[in-house]
Every structure is written in structure tokens, then in C-alpha cells.
Amino acid sequence: MDFVHEESETTPSGNVVVQYQLTPSGKSFIAFACEKGGLPSKIRESIEKIHKEYGILSLIELINRVYEEFPERAERSVLVSP
Image 1 (tube, rainbow, N blue to C red):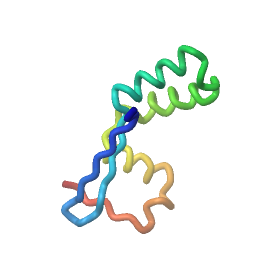
Image 2: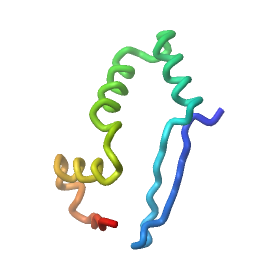
Image 3: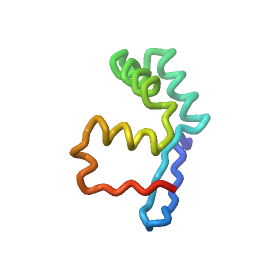
Image 4: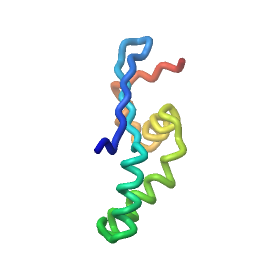
């Protein structure tokens, strides 16, 4: 089964951006595992917290948030807006 979809694209500056997204099968598997107790509660709670906090952000919003919270991660990075 294919649980995660991977999509790559090259930016105008030549960098490769890879995006991962759960497929419908992946979402079903996670839901099933949560319902049947297949995931430890701490892992399930972590997934829910991360999804709630970051799941609605676009890639650019997520990168900006990481750079704001962890400026040392941006030291050698260049973010080019489209």
C-alpha cells in the first residue's frame, strides 16, 4: 500500500523542494490505528498536536515560522519568494 505521496519540484533558483502528503490509504491507516489502539497515546497526541499547529500552514508559512522560532536554522538559507 502507498501511504505517503511524494512530490518533487525544482524552484527557479534550482533547489529541489520535496513535499510529502498522506494518501487516502495513509489517512485510513492512521485513523484505524488510532481507533484500535495501535498507536501509543503519546504518539497519537503528538501527531494531533503537530497537525493542529502546523497542518494548515503553507510551505512558505511553515518555513517562515521555523526561521522565526529557530533563527540558527536560517543562517545559511536563502528564501526566494515567487
